[in-house]
Amino acid sequence: MEGYRRTGHAVYLVTYHIVLVTKYRCRCLDGELVESIKADFTRMIGANKGRVHAIECDRDHVHILAELPIDQPVAKFIGVLKGATSRNARRDYGEQLSKFYWEKEKWSLWSDSYFLASTGGVTLDVVRRYVESQPTKKRKRGNPNFVKRRAHSSHTNP
Image 1 (cartoon, rainbow, N blue to C red):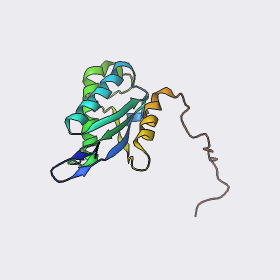
Image 2 (cartoon, rainbow, N blue to C red):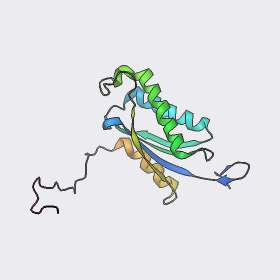
Image 3 (cartoon, rainbow, N blue to C red):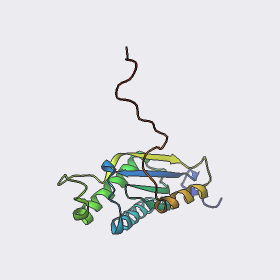
Image 4 (tube, one colour):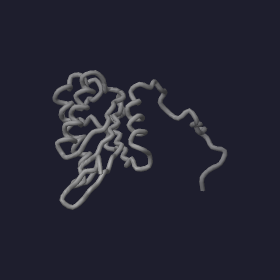
């Protein structure tokens, strides 16, 4: 059973695709900050019996493909990761980030929300290629099929 994790009472393989977005969708992730964030996530997940398979950053979000520890609630663990990386970024890159975040003391790098999916629906290799391809694509934001509604509708709501 290669690749499976074991505890005293369980054998498991649970892999997640996590997407964290910067607060206000600020396009502030670049350079050394990105490398620091990747290292922080990899170190913290590894220190908690997890494993990072792939991690890539775009200017305003990060994709993480990882096995997380099963002995902790996933939402709480993600909150810990977001809090620690935000504190580290504020401490080490506060000057760089001050152009994006105007709150002096307690701003957070990450939005309160996040995306989380288990990768059971597709192979790990497909998700890995997707995550690894994220920083290489230049794409426009928004949905090209989205049609704006008129300000004045031809009907009124009851």
